[in-house]
Image (cartoon, rainbow, N blue to C red):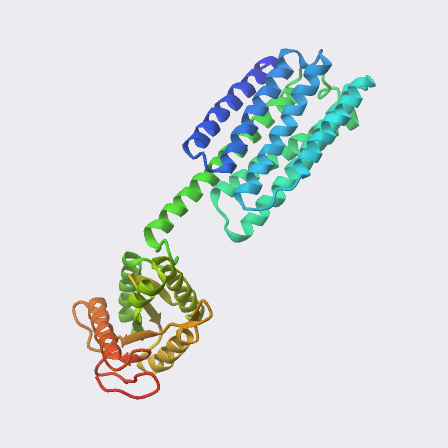
Length: 393
């Protein structure tokens, strides 16, 4: 394969990537990261085409072609910053402007081609290093196949630019610009082709992995409070109950309801009611353990599942949760309270253990409301309590 064929292969592959990236952006115009990545692919295509069309002979085309390559890499870096919600700043513009200025000076002073190669490769290494930094920061929170693939693509491009710099420094005849050796074609075109392909594919996978995560989040979590929705809390609760029965471990379910919630909506409006739901959900999450399941069962009702907690721990559990909500003040002025029913897994398990638990907890919740609200009740045949005073079933 000669250099021209390899260069055309690089252009075709990059043009295909640009089309896919543009399609991803058009499918989700609000996603700024795909906009940057589509822009990056287009700039790289333009840069390579300009270089093939005569960039080696025309100084202006040289500047445009190399500038497009650098700003393409910078646009990929910007896209990663947006994707991982990191501040952009002006660093990319400074790098791009600095490169174009220095490259123009090299052209004006008729500097040798080796100097331009050194400048281009060094600048690309800097931008790729910044991209790796953003990517590694994102990997600390969640490691996915897309992020690892992106990192691998960047790694190939880094090695490629290091090889170019080394070739210039040692003046290897097989890697010099006028050489048509297989080594030079690999370093100049084939390795970048693989790196660019892996990099772009990794970026697309990052985007689609996020779409899948968001879809799963919407399917399993309440949009307002961020808690598990009714379907998810029921499914997770049934799994925990089955696991507790199989391992003969204790488990407790709590059913909670905000007292006089309709009055809040009537007095302050439904937006205020939504704020109360969000604040109460945050309090419940903060009070519960990381292994506990917290869900919004519907309206102002919440369902909580406590693995490893039996009847003896239910009293402390009820006191802690009721006290946490009791200390809350909506808009720092208006008190909000909750009533709660608690039921623990018993030795005599019926055919529908989850449904039975929820029914018993719901019955205990009704009793808590009937006996004054702002309290908890334990289901029948268990240790029973209501607020700080004992109560019978």
